[in-house]
Length: 128
Image 1 (cartoon, rainbow, N blue to C red):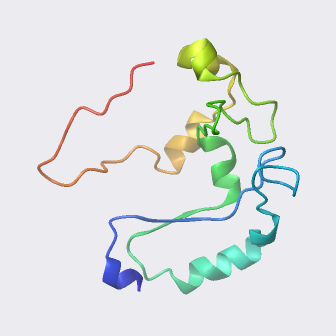
Image 2: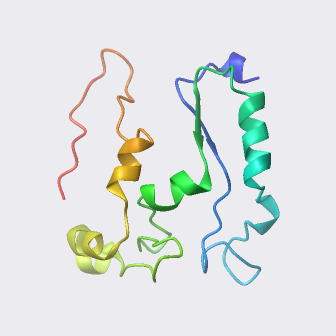
Image 3: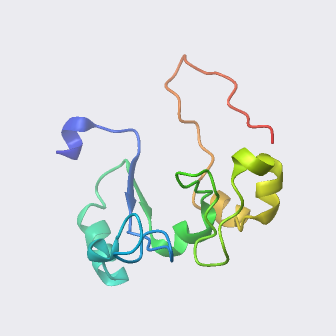
């Protein structure tokens, strides 16, 4: 099936449970039933290793290398500390001062890449 779709990148995430966000039946989402062990995730990756577009992202890689906004525009701090105040209230620069984001992990996982098709280049720089 993946061969038919022929994606440029096929991001395969291990389900990341974030305390207070998707960790129980009392939260808006409950991801507990979708979790797999690191060993099960590795078996999946080994089975699909021939896929050129495969970009695996385990929980260890994802946990701190993403900036994640929830529905009320708070950055999640992924089990490190409480979410930030909403960027709608305090703005992005102030929220960035209070979010835990591992920029080195972001770079190691290839977070910056050329994602546009040839011939459709635009300025995508973000200025906070």
